[in-house]
Structure formats: structure tokens, C-alpha cells
Image (cartoon, rainbow, N blue to C red; front, side, top):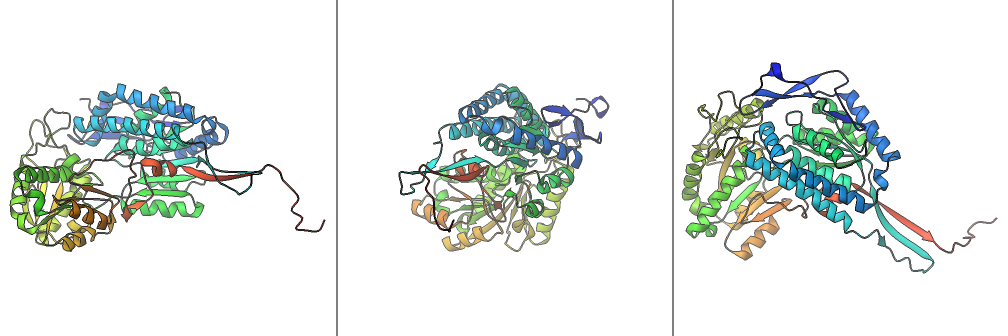
Length: 506
């Protein structure tokens, strides 16, 4: 692995079809979270770079061919991008692993999902009718509702799923005929940079796709307030999301926010009545909480289990959590990688310390692992942690930890389970485990969360809208609603036989 003296800064800002360095000349080292060593250098853009990128996107939208490109051609380009993603799957999966800390296998799955998203939106727009005819009650009137692109879109993406979250915004934005400026997280920008290169290779006109690498306090803030931006789509934390909405308000631009969650995983005793059912529910609880070290907005970080099976369930859950193999994501057999940064690990440690001080019982984890050949001493590793005997007043139960920490609460009745699951300021996702089909439908219908899984956790479908209630944000991604976010609606009323109105003397 190269040390920092061997690294070369890259021109990672792309505006108007050209790659270049930051106007200021500033750069940032990208660290591998498995060992805290730099392995890439990117341009550190600021407001000047942002203004140049927005200007390029504005010209491409107002003067360029893309907004008027036939739908079939736009769809064909998206399919070419999907093919290029499949071609580069191994390289991109490895890059995602080194950048974000996840396992290579998770990185590969992410790339597959990105390709699926591009294909889905290509098929969606290609199969649409050109407009919805509105009956005006007269054969002399042709009235139709059509959809047009919003304009210049500012797309601000998070560090945990860099390329996947970017694709959920970029694919529908392009399918609708928009131009865009994307700002990836300054911590994990590398695969988004690579995607811009693939868009260019696929034949996207210059200026349609632009990227500015840099921090949220400068690049993100400027995009949110910029008068040349028509829409801002942000995925990230609640505090930053509120700032984005406030910055966008004076120009009354369209805003879409996906802001995370504190997601309940409700397990009824009847789901554990058989050995197979018990094993599956425990396995899925591990998956819900610890995939990508819990750095997932939809993570099932709150296990809410029926009291009669709680001791057996938590004992087995903790035993398996202790057996999860931690290490560098590029090592075969590793099941869980490091946290993304030292700052993130310190945040997780503070939450665990707070929980123990408030009476939680530590059943597994709760500390940094011992270093090993696959866990370098300087890596940002933290053991999968199970905290038992938790209650709603605890900070660790109320707030999004975004790390490998699972809290355990118990209930006795169905009403109590629903009340606990809904007792959160967030409303992104949740799950219910039960062998009773009627109960499954009742509980799912009562949960105030944007996605509810029954006897499963974490799958998503490109065809289904993704979003939340409460402080989990506004707007929808994926599905037809995800495409609608990037469109304006226009009513075209054509009078084929106009006559004088004669309302006024003349």
C-alpha cells in the first residue's frame, strides 16, 4: 500500500465536461478506515468550484440537447451506464470497500443494485405514455398534462452507501431530462467520481453531469442556497437536513430530504415457536443491526421482543454477535468492517458509555477489538454490541447511533409493541416478525414508518418508493414517485377553433 508521499492528487472536480483541480488548489487525503492510512487524494472544492459547476449545469439545461433528447435515447444511455457498471463491478466493489470500510461482497452487491436502479428508471421512462389527456368537454379543445424536467438538480449524498445513494438520485434525474451537480461525502467520494466517468463514456453530453468534491459546509451549503439550482436532494443527518431546507427556502426551490431513522424490529413469540423460526428471527436481527457495522439509515437498531422469549432470544443473539468476524473488508471471510472514521467510532463509544450509565446491561461487545493481522491497530473497528434492559428514556434508544449497537426492549401485548415501535421522532423503516398473518397485517398497518418489512429485514425494490415519516424526511426515492421528484407538471390547453370572448366592449 502506498504511503502519503507516493500519492498523487487527482483532478476530481468535473464541470462542463472537463476534469480539473479545485480553484484554490486545495486537496484532501482519503483514508482507508481499516488502517487509517491515506490511499487517494482528491480536490477540495469550495464555493467558487460550486458556482462554476452550477453554471455549467445551467448552460447545459438551458442551451444543451439533453432536456429535449427523446425519451428512448435517454433510456438507452441509462442502460449503457448499467452495462458499464457490470463491466467494472469488481473494481468498483473493491473501491467501495476501501473507501467506506464495508466488505468487498457488500460492495459488489451495492454495484449490482446501482446497475438495477439505472435499468429500472430506463424502463420506467421508456414505457410511459407521452401525456395524460384531459377531457375538456369539447371536440374543439385538446388538453393534455405533460411532465418536464425540473432543471438543475443539486444532489448531496452520504458517506455510508456512496454510489448506491448517488444512483437513487442521478438515475431518475437523468431519466427525466435534468442536469445536475452531485456532491458526494468528502469522506467517501471515490466511486461517485468513477460514475461520472462512466456517464461520460456512455455518451452523456458535456455539462449534464457535474461533480464537486468538497465539504458540506462550503460545497453543500452553496448548492442548497444557489439561485441557479432548481431542486436540492439531500440524504444525511437530521441537523444537516434542516440546514439544507433553511438554505433552500429563500429561493423556494424543490427540496427532497432523506434523514435517517431509529428503526424498530418487533419480534413476537409465535415467530420463534419452531427452531427454524427462532433461528431465522435471530439471524435477521443480526443482519438488521450489524450489516455495514450498523452504518445504515434503515438499520434495525431497536430490537423489541416479546417478554416470554426475551431471555432465550437475547442470549443467542449475543452469542452470535460475539462470533462475528471483524476485519479489513478486502479480506476473505470477514463479515463486518470498520467504522468509517475515528470521529464516528468516538460517537458510538459515547452512546454506549451513556447507555451503561443509564442502566443498560452489556451482553456483547462494547469495546474496540484486539488488533490482529486482519484488524490493523489504527483501524476504526468496534465490536458488535448488544445492550439489554433498555427503555425509551435512554439516549441510545432515542437517537440514531449509526454504528454496531443494538438495544433490546420488551413488550407483553400487541398494543404495547406498536406503541413502542412508534415511539420515535423518526419514521423511516421497521419490521414485524410473527407467524400470525392477521397480526402481521394489523401491526404493519399501524406502524408509522415509510417501509415495513414482515418476516424480513433490509430488502428494497427499485420499483417501490423509499422514504419516511416524521424526522426521517420529506420526498420519495425509487419507484414512480422517485421519478416524479425530478419533474414539473405542465397543463397544455389547445383551442382548435378559437372565437372572440366578447366580455369587454371594443
